Length: 114
Length: 111
Image 1 (cartoon, rainbow over the protein chains, first blue to last red):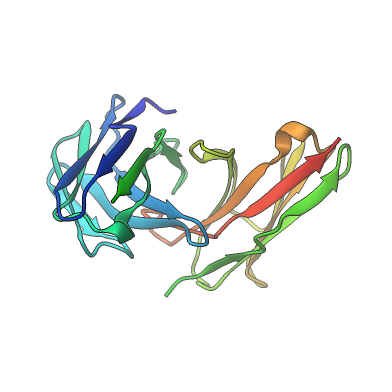
Image 2: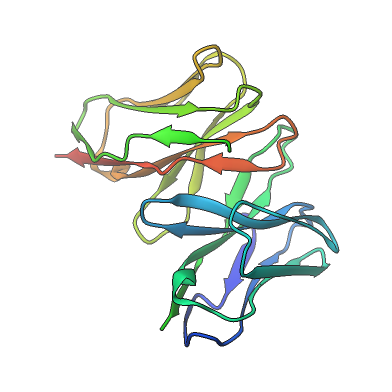
């Protein structure tokens, strides 16, 4: 699992409440990613980070914000959760094998918005 | 918008046979290609990466890349019931900073 943990692993929340998901890595990787996975849509990139305080949007960033104040932690925040944000959220890091692009995933967070 | 297409399946394969999975992509400047395996309820696991045209073999897995035709395939030889999973194709751009994933192909290996 490339030293990646996600918390919480499961969460049920109500529409309109703020939610923060945490991704923690122990191997000093520069690049970190947040994806969501939904049936019929595969994995879709929400936001990614290429360093402390350096982040950029992915293809489905509306309704989400991120922060990275230290190398090991990448936070995903749903400012006001909606039912359409019910999904499984995966964090990933980019490997450092020297070849471009390999990503390794954390265990995931299952979020249900009621 | 960059697209990666896979047949959703399920691809049903007898035990011991070869499973053949295909993936096509739209971005001609794509430089890196990956296959992930995902068991139900688990996270994706990287099983193959390929960067140059041709074949790359790793154990029972062979990845094949044809950039001119914009497709990448995965062969699983001597399929086992433990190979039953969803296989995700992922394609990376020139900088290699982001991946675009296909929707995945579900494979069922029947004893």
